[in-house]
Structure formats: structure tokens, C-alpha cells
Length: 379
Image 1 (cartoon, helix red, strand yellow):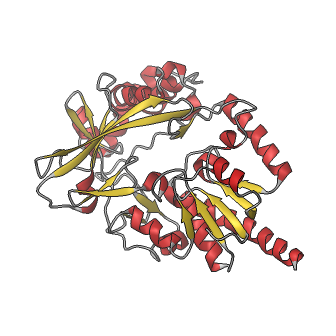
Image 2 (image 1 turned 30 degrees about the vertical axis):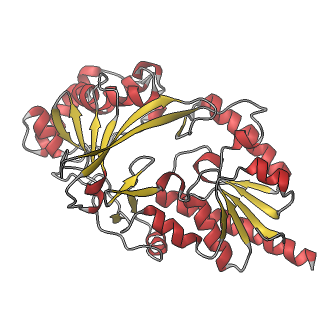
Image 3 (image 1 turned 90 degrees about the horizontal axis):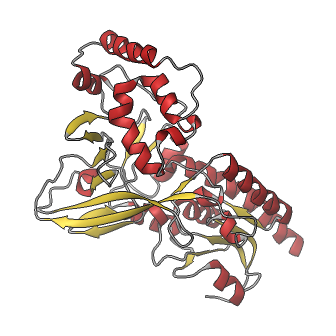
């Protein structure tokens, strides 16, 4: 690493950090990116196995209705037009997702939207819930008993590690029911998987930027204090401050990946297992993301897990206690000024990839305006 000062130190070589690094290079600023992992691309990292791009940290399907964001990502990759159409397996019963006419026809034997609406309204009325006090009551009020029991309850309880009666109603604000025969999970205009995998996309974003892997921020800062006038930190905000106000809560995941001697294991990229008894929440067959024709296949079982410090944090538990704690950390960051927290961990929230890119662009605008001002002041 060169010893001269950088304009911006970016902690995290995932999608958010890569977008900010690319924007820094566009702005003529010198950026250094560090990451504690041995690879770039964060949770969208893909690794080739048996000629198949394996999503090492869970399935990622890019989708957006924002044309500028779509045009931005297409600078770095061609997208293959993959349409996400997962299915649900409930004790061997197969249902299409999202909830649509194929789902309702399989569940109740109905054929028309009016029949499906009538069935849902009948079950909503039977639930007779005015003010839901928990997630179970909220779901029953929205879609009735059958959809809740077969497609929501078990999956949700595995994902969060709690009974639905113990989860706040606010987790489910709405449950879209589509009264059309359409299995496309997303309504967004643009959708697909980058040809060659996400790692190549991020690699192209980072081209021309110095990147240090296997490097933690604490160790790097101890050896190289004041490396940059501005720091963009994409790791957990509470970890940055040594958890001195308390720990934010997350849910984690565990993955089991295996190569199978068959060309087609489940016929679709994603199968959600919605019963409580099956320990995994879904199985991903990676080749179907890119219409693979390889003679063998790679599948990953995804298990929800409790999170403990040192585990990989995946889903923020954004209840009242945790949001209040996050706001305390954020207030401290705003007072100090030098460090800007970005991404799903820095901002303690879930981001779809397009929203992560949009948020990263806003962070870049803010940080670079300050970095340019600091350069001018130094002249």
C-alpha cells in the first residue's frame, strides 16, 4: 500500500462499498477499500463450482423499476433476463409464489379471481380480527387461515426463531395477493442475474481502486491512523463503537452446499419449505439462475440461526428496542462527523440490491462533497 493519504477509506468491498468506490474514482478522488473477508462482493459473492455460479451467501436476484439504477448496473454486466418464480413446499404440497391464481387454484380448487377473493374474504371474516396484536393475527386478518397456516406460519417462525404470536404485527404490513395466473415474484420492470455472476460485476466496479482483503478496520487503523479524511464504514455501527451502548440484534443464517450427480434436482432455482418441521427455510439450485445445462448440479440448504457476536449478521431485528439503540449510535456518529455509516449493517436495515445502490449513491454525493471541501481547505 502506498503511504500517501487517501481522500476516502471505504470499509467493506460489498455492493455498497463498490458503488461508492466507483463514484470516488469518477470524482477524481483517491479511495482505498478494505474488507475483513478474503474476497470482494460481500454477501452477493458468487463462486464458480462445477461451472455453476454459486451464491455463497444466499440467493440474490437483481430487480428494480428505477431506470437510472438499471442503467448503472448495466455498465458493469449484462443481465440474463431471469425471472424469479419460486415455489413453496408444505409437507409435499407444492404452491406457487407469490400468492396468485395458481396458488389459490391449487389450495381451494377455484378457477376465477372472484372465487378466490370470496374464499379469502370468507376466511378473513371467520378470523374476526379488528386490531391485530401480533404477526399471526395480522396475517389472519389479511389473508385468512389456509394461506397463513400453509405458506406463512412455519417459514416465518423458522426465520425469526419465535412463534408468530410472539412477533409484532408490524413485521407484516401487507401480504399481496395477485388475482392473475402469474408466477413472477417481482413486479419490477427490470430483472435478472448478471452473466458471469455478481463477483465479476463488483470486480468491474472496483477496477482501478486499491483493495485490501483479510483486513479488519481496527487493525488497519491502528497501523495506519488518519489514512483518509473521510471514512465510509459498511460494517455494523455498534461494532464500530465497541458495543459500548449495547448490541443490536440480528438473525443469522447457516448454509450447507453440496454437488449432486444429477443435472436437475428440483426444477426451479428456489424452493421455500414452509412447514415448521423441516429445519431449513429453502433450497437453492444455483444453475437455474443462469439456465445451466451442466451434467451435475449444486444445491444449498439455508438454515436460519440465532446470531451471536462473531457470527455473520443477516437480518436486523428492527423492533422498538433495537431501533432506539441504533438511533443512539447514529446520533454519536453525526456528532463526530468523520465516519459515515452505509449499507445494511451501517444503517441497520434490510436493503434490496437496487435500494442499496440508490442509498450508496446518496452517501457518495454527501461524502465526496465533504472530501472535495477538505481538499480545498488543505490547499
